[in-house]
Image (cartoon, rainbow, N blue to C red; front, top):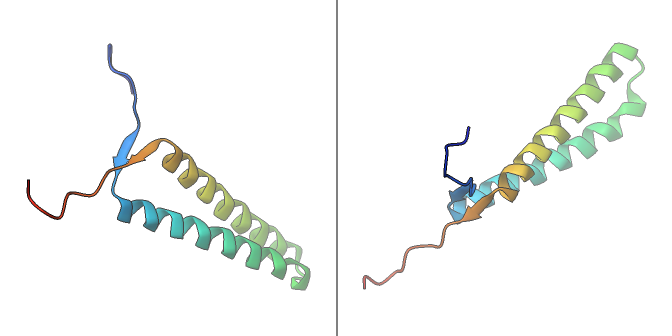
Length: 83
């Protein structure tokens, strides 16, 4: 959604939230690799198909989260001493 005269500058997120998303991306990518390594052990074609779908979904979610991070800025932490 865009408004007249407004430019889309993305989102501003906290450093903690950015790290949480980055950790989730890493976990999704690790899980996809792990699940992919199990494919040769699956003998049933339906199981293989479902496993491949799971892998595709994990990687798609990681890509979606990366795009979100690419479009966002990290908010600077507040100063520890009041000015």
